[in-house]
Image (cartoon, rainbow, N blue to C red; front, side, top):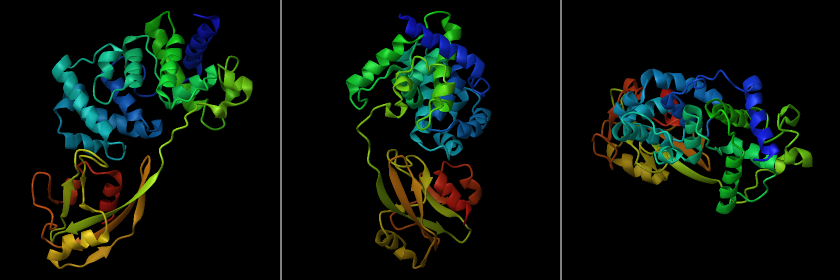
Length: 349
């Protein structure tokens, strides 16, 4: 190991102890269940948002056995509003596998952890480092930005070979000594630097403990890192939502398919256009009332949602009542897995 690498590891560990985030509810624990839960929630979600969901989730599912035994819809209902609902489905399935295949104990190695649903290499590394002191790198978006800037790693990360090279560089920088203490500190320190100092825009380089060894700071070009040329293009899609209520105020809801947008969640029937919606309600003879349209922004797609309210006791023409579809009261909506915009829409009825 070079002196420069020793300096990076030691300075990150020291800085994290003195200036990093040390009082988040999922810190200062080696409980793999709690660490895993926080890491999944923090994927593509701000800390401030997770701080609200994390304690409520633990209150309802205090351990992996309780989570594994819960119905999926109960998990989705509690997750509602966090977005990226595949995380919740994978969370539930992962808990079941940990209980069934591992006796309720999370594996201690990165390969075993990464083989579980919803846990990629970076999340597996975080769990292994935080809980077991394993010498394992992570490369979430924040850490990737920190390391490419510090190392001056300008290769295009859209190419798999360059991504692999960055993983090797990240592994080379890891601490070697006192791993039970150093690895959690170092891993958390990189996360903290990316979240509070080494920001995508206007990084606070003068406050960074690595400014003296940072290539991007030396060259005055932190904005040039990381390099990724291939970007997904945004798209737009229109959905027409049929809000059909019967005489008792119940709403017809059906469960979305197991793949795609809002997979596995309950939702009013969705149609590609107004004509298709009109055809579905023609049998009831009840006129539809247009509610204000609105846009729901997904990662790479804008959903233009057009809700139409209809009064009628007959199920929509394409539907048949089953365990996956039916009439639900407002009280029942509260305990169901609903997409956040749908939950807000129903609350306004």
